[in-house]
Length: 462
Image 1 (cartoon, rainbow, N blue to C red):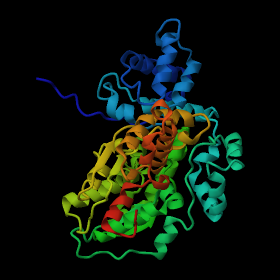
Image 2 (cartoon, rainbow, N blue to C red):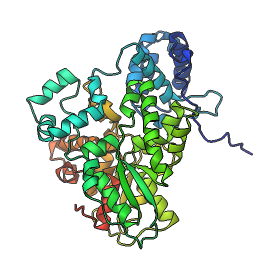
Image 3 (tube, rainbow, N blue to C red):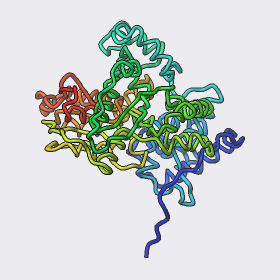
Image 4 (cartoon, helix red, strand yellow):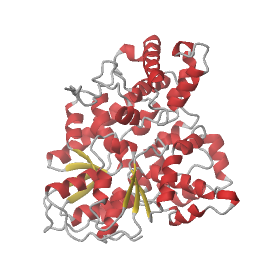
C-alpha cells in the first residue's frame, strides 16, 4: 500500500531572520537546491532559469554544481519570473518531502539580497514597478502616453528602450481615463433581486491593472455579479505589491499588505467578500501575504475572505445557481490558464466558468505564457519571454478560436504578440502562412469575465 506523503505545502518566508540575508548561508542553500535540480532536470522546459542552470553545470570543468562560480547564479535568479509553476506542477521534492525544495521562494530570497545590495534583476528602470505612481500620472495624459507606447512609434520606443530598459517591440498596456474606481462611483448596475445568489455582497479589489489600464474588466465583473443578484462596490487602496515582490523588496510588500488588510477589514466586517480581478493580485492576498507576514491576524483574515473573480462566479454556480440568460459565444474560446491562477491551487476556475456558457467550444492551454509580470517587457528578457511562450502561441494559433483570453491581461497580449510573430513567418516552401488567418481581429484579447458578460448580453459585444 502506498502512503500519501501529503499535499505540497509552503513554509513562511523567514525574511526577518539574519540568516536569510547572510551571503554564505544563501550560497550554501543555492548550491544544495541547484544540485538537486541538476540531478532531476524535470523543469528544463518551464522557463529560462533551468536551462541556464543546466548549461552552467554542463559547461563547468566538473560537470557538477561545485564547478559553477557563485557569481553565475545571478543569471539563474534573474530569469525566474516567480510564476510558481515549478513548485506547483513539476517538482517532486516540495515540502513535506525531506529535501524541502521551494525554488521560487529561494529565488525571492536571492532577489531580496540583490535589493539589499542595491542591485536589480534587470536593467529596466525601477519606475516600471511603481504602478500606482505611473497610473495616477498617466491617466491625466492618457492619449499622449498611449501614443508614446505604441510599438510602431519610432520616435519614443527606442528612447524608452535606452532610458527605461523597455524593449522596443514589447507591447505595453494602454492607460484609461477615468479609472475603474471613478467609473464605479458614477455607474452602479441594478442588482437582480430575483437571482438565486441575491443577498451576496462583494468588494471588488480593482487591482492596478483594471483600475488604470482596463476598467472594462471591472465593469464586466460588476455587470455579471449584479445580474446574479450580487451587490458590489469597487475599492482600491493600493497595488498588491507584486511588482515590488519581483524586485525583492519584501519589507515594502509587507508594509503594503498590512495597510491594505486594515483598509479592507471594514468591508469584511460588513459581510462583504473580497474579490480580486487579476490572479496575481488574488495570489498575493490569499497566499503570499500570509507567508510573508505569518501570524498577522488582519492579513490572515483577509486571505480567508478573498477570492479570484472566476473562482467566485463558479462558487455561485455551484452553491446557489446562476441567473438565466447565458448564450453561446460563436467561434469558440482559446483560454490560457494564467500561472498565478494555477498557483492558487483552486482548480481551473476560468475554464469551469466559461464551460458554463452553452454550445461554446473552450480550448484550454495550461502552460506559461512567458511574460512573467514586468520581466516580459524588459530589454533583457523580452525575446526570451517570447521564446518561452512560443508553444502557447503556436497552440492558440492552431486552435483558430474567435476569442483569445487569459485571466492575466499581460499574458493574453503577450500570447497574441507571439501568434503574430509565428503567423508572419513564411509557410512551407516560402508560401504564405495559412495560420495568419487564425489571428484574432485587431489583436483583441479578453479577460474570461468579459466573455462571460458578453455571453449574458451585458453590454459587451464581439
